[in-house]
Length: 114
Length: 111
View 1: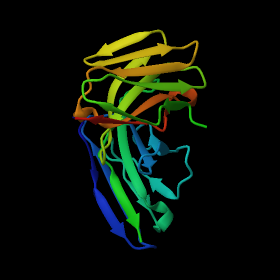
View 2: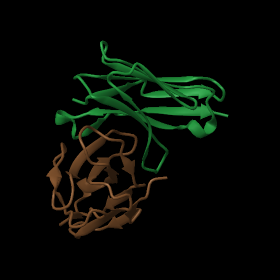
View 3: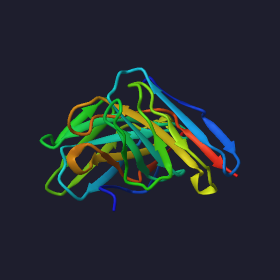
View 4: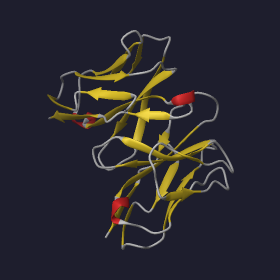
């Protein structure tokens, strides 16, 4: 099993709250990713990082932000949660270099905004 | 639109039978990957096949790639109830730095 951890696993919270979803990996991977996935649906890339101090927006417009201050840590923050943010959020990492390398996924955070 | 699209959307078989899932994509690729996702969990990487490869095996998994048809198939032989999961194909995004996932095939293996 890959060593990538997401916390919390489940979060139910009210509208307007600030939320930070944590993601950490112990594999020393340069690349990290955040995906949004509704149940039974495809994954949408919302943020990714090539390495420390690198962050890029993905294909799906998102009101979230990310930071990459340390290699192993890639938190995602929602400044003001809304019901439309209800979804599952998956974090992943992969080795650096060119091309799409196999990604290792955490078990996700299931977020419900009331 | 998605680079990779799986077919069928859902598949139900008996334990011991083979399961075949297909993936079609639109643009040229460097490689194609298959992942499995159990309910409530993250994705697990199964196999990667490069654009210059035609077939690859890993245990009970067999993946084929036809770049002329822009398609791939995943065959699971002698399926087990534990194979029940969603299976996704994934291909290169623009510049090869992003991976684009299809919508997945839901496989149900009945004991």
